[in-house]
Length: 110
Image (cartoon, rainbow, N blue to C red):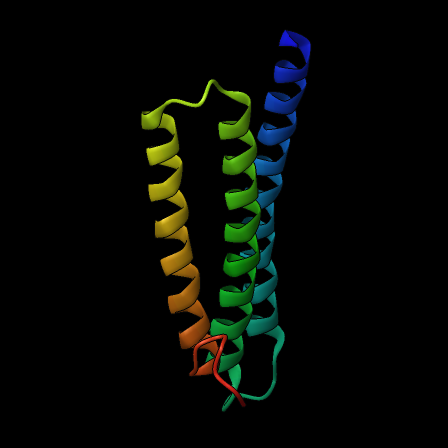
């Protein structure tokens, strides 16, 4: 059982690294598109949307990594509370980014 915990811990660290890499490469990609885009009237909006999308995806991946890391530990009230707070903060960040990008909440109709 201890071996499984070690493997899942390693996997959750890899998933965390993937989440950070998604955000990092999303920033690089957004800045690259911003610099080479010839349409000057739409550049800022394109930059914001591209950055926002990469941050949203990275946050979702980081939430998954946090859930995996918490599941393998012995569940105490403190660890579950910390996970709940982390997920709540990241969910609020995701919702606010969604509203910034699209001007509406995800559950609202087009």
